[in-house]
Image (cartoon, rainbow over all chains, first blue to last red; front, top):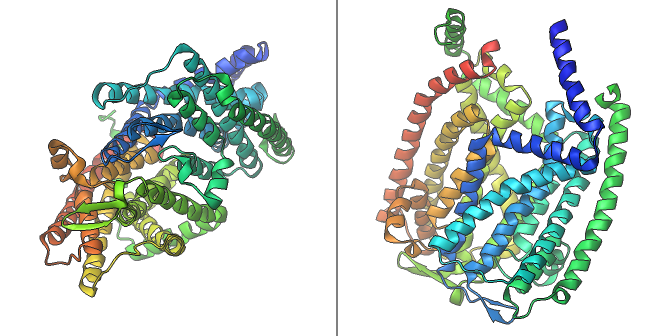
Length: 290
Length: 296
């Protein structure tokens, strides 16, 4: 028993050394590598997710053979190219949306959440886990893009400036979904159960953000609903960059500011609510031990 | 490991326990009672489930608007793309619910550490699997009906369907055969979920492949010839085709598309059930060697 206690305390000590005498970036890197290692230990799961994403892409490829008419911002595009952008983005958005909340719920279930709280603050944990999730789900995008380009006739042309704008938008899209996930993790920490709302928002984004059909089809309530989802703005801007003849920052400025505002407001609110939940769990729950 | 006599004794004791003649119906009743109590703890998820169904059907509705002329022809009938895609989406919705709920229940037990306890009950793992999946299937059917009734009114689903009594009866028979197939498929998939502990992913991959091959959002003539052959090796493809034929083409039991589909579904269900039986003991022994069940 003494041997076990000694070795366990050594592990904790080493972990503490790695995290307490370090800056935020190092701690985010620790979480990142921890989550990557953990995900890679479930290789079968990783392969299954990639396979599923490919199946989804293939399904819309065959649907595109019905020749749906597509006009995006006055320019005609093939349906498959249009849907591919949305579906690829959906893969990383889904991950950034579900990662923080899902990981916290799993930590609570497996009893490791209190020890995580000793070493990391919630923002570090959110960024570390989400970056790991996004890095892994990006594999699906590269695999799908390779298959699409080689076998399904997919073609994308953009210049360096457009690439920079897309990366900028991608960062904002990811951050806006990470803060939503943080917001719902407050519920998860407070009640120690999953609200199921993250999955609901994912489905809403999947349907009403213009991933597989243009949002011009949405009218009335569904149109309003679409405008409450950050992915709508991000995806609209990415489509604008890809299909406009002269893409520049001014073209995406409006949607850029909306996404930025969304991140600041929801991010601030989530930090406040999560800290309240953690405070409560420290008083009433098992975290009080630490 | 295999030569460990102590472990063999434990295995033998499990086998003995599993053959204990405990009243099966009582066990099923207990499983139902326990699961209903758990479900009632998560009322908000029940409500969210309705919105999820609504969103899923909405996606199908908007995709249908993209089809040129908003009409699709298949198996000698022409129908609006809306009805064609909605029919596929509804079949997918029902079967996804069954498979997802079945596999998630096992993963949930494993995550919370209650799976080992359930495994070692005198009721036996196999009977537990049967009763758990039977419950999840009934639960999925109830949810499917409750969630979709308002959706039928919201979207005016099947506004252009003209169906006679024979087609309705055939449709019920088809759905019954489809449920049998998914009962067996869930049992088999649960076996592998117990082993690799990744129920959600297993379910999603199975559903994804079945959905792609069945042509749930497009007619199968769009497939290249080789993929058409692959598609027709899936019993689910026959089921979706036959259900659509009953709904839109006035199909009934006398049509070859329908009766062949029913036979394929039943034969596949029986085959998968035997496969479950065959793999069950092997997988159970494997988790005893690799997992935590040997501790009991």
